[in-house]
Length: 357
Image (cartoon, rainbow, N blue to C red; front, side, top):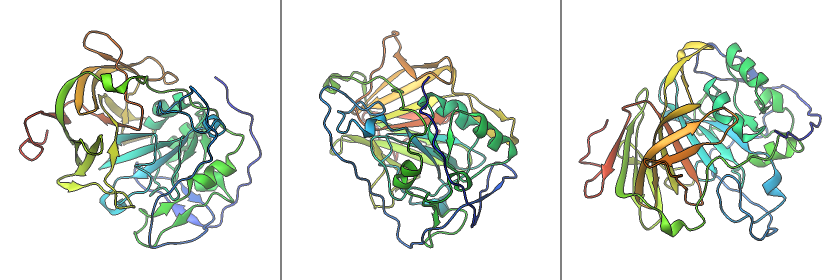
């Protein structure tokens, strides 16, 4: 594994930011650049075409060879009702949704593009270590954690970008359109700037098709999920957008731009949840080993298996015959569910008529 050499990073602390959830957590510090009552996401890149190459986390053509070498940037984002609408869900290359003590939490993985701003940012969990280590030294944006979580992050192959660790120029701020603790944001452009020279280029996490039109599987309407706490979400194929679109309960899940959250690839991975050593109330997804996988793309579903022998390995997806499942080039949303937390809505049925799991 190659991690680029470190550069010095100035750390200052002038503003108290208290994270919550997952037990007693540390108080973190950060400078505040501004407050805002309106949150909207945006991103920008330069263009240096690289013929024949693709971006590692989307499988899409590489438009910028310089940006393709930068590290992935992961942001832990809140999914409490008070945190919605969030910023960055439609800009991340990969989104993981994980069970926590109540509701769920997202890990947004940015690489090919960014989001200014992104958030609301919340605390980490020990399950993030195994989940994200294969990205090869991510810039990890989080709001803090209890002592056990903080030690786990410190010992991981992450570049910590909590407000305290990131320090001056990291762009953290509290918005005034939400209540704390659901209102902490930063900008991916600021994090990439202060993290320059740190972390490593991410390897592909999934395998992508070179001919997406050949996607196999069975026609499907979508899926419905009932995860921990009170989190109910559904995904429905939108033929016009050529993507699966997300709802919370029966309401559209909109981002801060007023756009419905969508994804080209939807992975429903059944994992075991154990108890975190950092907090007996905190579930810990076991993302190494093997389990059931539902792969939804292009209006179809393929049922199979996920396999990941080690936390440094990418995901291997195989169908019921043992053949590799190749994803459609584009964004990927991964739902890490417990057994029994998901139900498929087959073709010919409707979301509304299908009972929640």
